[in-house]
Structures are given as structure tokens and as C-alpha cells.
Image (cartoon, rainbow, N blue to C red; front, side, top):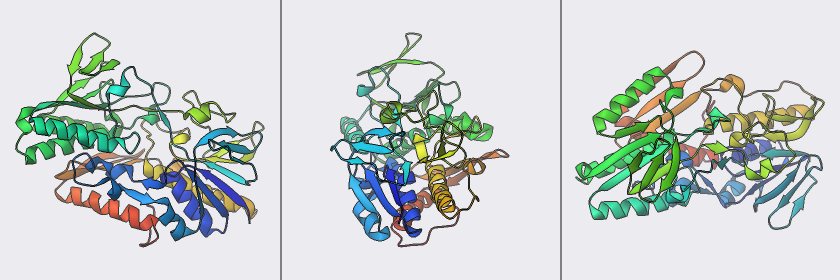
Length: 393
């Protein structure tokens, strides 16, 4: 039985482990956390609509459901040429037949970023955001700023959707409490048209929504520094804020940047369309990179998303099995590139879709919120094998 070592316990890693185990591989998944975190539904933790445990799935439970091995440790060093991985515990694993790197990305470093919290950062930050919001609610008034940044070396590493969603949910929470008029809400971003990758219709509808909800906009100015009392921009202007939520763009993982794996300018692992790292002579290696850690090639509007990570995971498992059985019917991720999300607002949602042929946003008042809630349950129970996976999801 061939051995596969998977680094990372997110969407990509967990799916790769479950698929490969079904193919009768000896699979070990390594994660620095003992739980799988459902990031898309973490937006409700700060507003008390969900508890932290509601968006966590124990890796032990996933191990019991699928039969793969789990190791809780952090990756210290990867040696592509020596076929080995060293962990912070001192453990070295070098007897794998295949290595799948699914460690996610690091974050762009901004001056004063410690004065912000991120809904896409360490999972525990969702609870810290809750605490910060609770203090402002108790005070009864305040200025709240939320936004995201970009990576000039890799446009696919931007993740702005959760920022929009969290701010809309905070608006809805304050409205329910009858204190919305006491708060100034502002969305900020250094690009002139944040959300443009979703398409022109979506961009226009977002602008209408901001105006309707009374949310101020601060776009098109580069961020110089995050101070305790707000955000300072390159032109010297300042956006005052009692609490700032900021999602930095993704950057190459620090372990990857220090490794001998081939990388793009931003430090993401270079692969072919089949998610395989190629050797210097162009031949296929025994290393695959999937999810946010991989360099995503394709359309200018491409974005790293969970469902793309799942496609990569399923394809990587399939491609490994094909190689071992002498086949060549490999599957790539590029044909599946699209933007797909249900953007929640707390009292409704909007369905956003874009591919190479079309782009649209479909408002879904009321029912959209419960559809995303249902998706969260589907995500949990389908990964635990308690309900069937929907084809293509």
C-alpha cells in the first residue's frame, strides 16, 4: 500500500485525504489544529448567530469516518529534493510515495496590522472580533471599519467576500438591537473597485446595497498604516475607527518560501494544471500542491476559493491513482475555474457567479440566508460521511 503524506487540514487537505483513503492508500494528514474549520460560516460567530464549535469539525471525527491517520504538528521544513518533511516536534517523515501540500497561505504584512483583527485569520480571531463588537454594543455607539487588501504579485490571492458579509451581518445585528443609527460603518479597500472580479453587475449591485444600508465607502487609496484609532492612507488622510477588521491578501507560506519547491513571485507553489509539481526536466514529480498554497493560473478575475481547493483535491487523488495504475486520464482544475458564493447579509443573501462566459449576482432576500445556513450543515455532515456529497460539490 503506497503512502501519501498530506500537509494541511483545510478544505483541500481533508478532501484529498478522504478521496485517497477510498482508493486504498495509506494516508496521513498533518494539521497544526485538531479541527477542520468551516471558514465560510465563521462570519456568524462575531454576531452571536453561531458559536465557535458550530463551525468546527473534529479531525478525530473525520479520522473515524474515513480511516486516514491524523498527526497534530506544524511543518518546519520541506525538502523537495530530499523527499522529506521536518516538523516542529522534531519528527522527520521521508518514506512517503506522494506528498500533497495543502497548507494554505500566509498573509501580507502591513504596518500596524496588530491593531486589526481578521475574519480570515486564525480561527480564534472570530471570537476576538465578537468581543470587540460586544464592547461597542455595550457602549451604544462607535465607528466600525472593515476592508481587505491586495497582493500586487498575485491578484488571485485577494479574499474580500467575507469582509462584505461580516459588515452586512454587523449592520443587521445593530439594526435588530435598534442602535444602528448610532454607528458609522465604513468599508475600505486600496483598489478603486473592490469586488470587480465578481463582474460588472455585481459591482453595481454592491454599490446600490452600500447606499441602501448607509455604509460609507473609502476606496482607491493605498494603506500606509493601521493605528489604534484608525487607518492611515498614502495621501495622509485618516479613516477613524473604534474597531477595524481587515483581511490581508494571501502571500506565499513562509515554509514554502524557505523551501526548494518551485514558486511564483508571490511564493505560491508552481504546478501544472493537474496540480503536480514538475521536475526541472518537465517530468511529473511525486509532489502535488492544492488549495491556497498553490499558484492559481488562469483568468485575471480568478480567485482562490474553497470549492476550487476541493476540485484540486479530488483531481489530485484521481491523478495519483491514474499514475499508479498506468493511466494518463489526468484531470485539471483550470476548466473548473469560476467564482461561486452565497454572499450572506444576516437577513438574506445574494448568489454570485462568474466564469469565462458570464457573470451575475442574484438577490435572494430571506431565503438566501437560510440557504447558506443549510450549506454549512451540508459541509459538516457530508465531510463526516453522514450524508452523500452532491455531485460537483
